[in-house]
Length: 457
Image 1 (cartoon, rainbow, N blue to C red):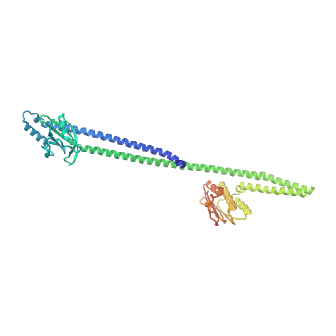
Image 2 (image 1 turned 90 degrees about the vertical axis):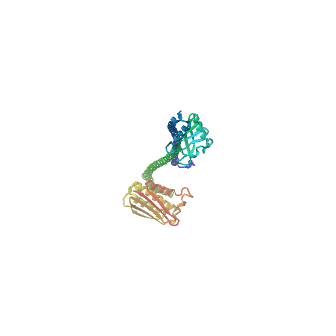
């Protein structure tokens, strides 16, 4: 399939396909790297925020412990009163919108919960969050081990639904209490999600931009290729036209040379031989009358006369001297006169050209086209009785029309039966196109044929 494509399309495909593949590969690689970088940045962003949150929790816990330290470590306050004072202090301490402190004993019984006082006094050691984590057990375990962080799901007071929360717990071992506080980190998740969405959008935009660049580059290359092909095509056509023009001129010059050689050389020799034969015949008839000799000489004279006429005809067909000396009108008069004598088909010439002489190239082209047209009429235009040959000049163009009243033909059958059929018309078209002109043929059965040739001056 690829081998059947035109050469120009093959070159275009071989240029564009690697470009498109390269741009696509770069776009995909860029998108992957952007996605990977965004994922790395999101992870790093999340870690940094968690670290900041942990430091914030430690600071809050430090403030809380500083507030109860004097009572908790005092040897002069009764334990019962100390616990009540710590209870009151922690229950009243809040920070931010959803920040508070909670207390459990090491058995899991809730002692302080400012936001859910209904939990106070209840044993929640076996309580699980929505993910199944025993968060109270883990908070107590971290407190017993000197303090630590626990991540779990818990109802957000301002939101009313379970969201991710990070808590820090320490132990008051003397009382067997665990004090904890936490920060909801759903905003971190939202920030990471927003960052990933932004990265996804950036990746999509990158792919779209790359696609636009690829399409634009393809169109630009295609346009440049088209312009180059058009320019090269015009240049090649012009070079071919110049070459053909030079070839035709060379042929015409060669025909002119051969025509003159025939007319001035061989024709003169033949005429000279004829005169010699006439002289010999005259002398022989006076000295020695002989009918047989006269017959031989008369036969040779007839053959020689035919040869002279044939040389003259060939010389005229190769390059009529009238075309060079007197111009197209005189050459056409001579051509049509010989055509009438040969075929008895009347030819009417209408010359409406305002210029006395056209360029040598146009005159030669018109003469050869008329010559070919008359030959075609003689061969193919049965029942033809009249031919109208017309020359017009208008708007810097010269138009030649040749119309006959013969039987005409169907143009669609020109190239169907005989490969040589239509070559004459093809030669006529080529001569017109060589001079940047054009030729049209209008014909149909029983309605005659009209050939119109238009060539710019």
